[in-house]
Length: 290
Image (cartoon, rainbow, N blue to C red; front, side, top):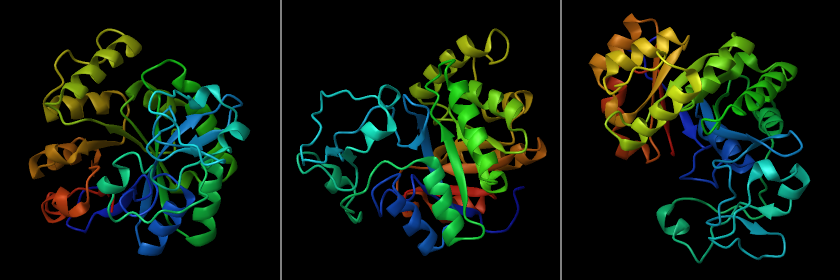
């Protein structure tokens, strides 16, 4: 995809977290029904090697409870890599914890009791059964650790076995994971994601990437769009997945001249993201909660 005057593709962040419980089959089904072009989702590996869809590596007490109705405590740390897929099946993720402000921060979200953490292959099966072209932007949650390559390998094997590579894109803040992805799954576009370039989170991510990728591959100061674009090209990326605050017509044009597609992400509603301004910049993809 290249930037153009056409309207950008719309993808539902975490399946459309403003409208249905995030990263659930209910969310992805709703996104398809509403006419989104695709959905972004986050993946992790369970202890027994299943690729599952959940935002964080730790279960979230804001919407996660046991089958007996007991909510996770805020201080209860249950990590997906430490749990089997069967163990994850004991948790429900479809309604907000009334002891938190999750419902208040997602006022339009329709709770869906009984939703469980899905597998990536389950999401693919849903997409294939309900649409001929709905695609998935799969975020590799590598957490800037060498073990992320195992997650990439599992995703690659899965999308190939499902014959879903033509409807798959990969994205990640963990550029080390994406460089590995380009070596094992070259036919699938890799979108290199950034926090807002002036954000402290961006600087922290760069520091961790330098440790993983080795000296010289990540410039010391990567706070300008030209440097980000040049680095993505050098690492073999296909697109820049930028924070909406960094989206300008100049940045999009610069990416296009370098041979990169451009996408914008925001965890707020499209209206807050200023859809008209972003679309006017010529981006290829807009990712938002609704």
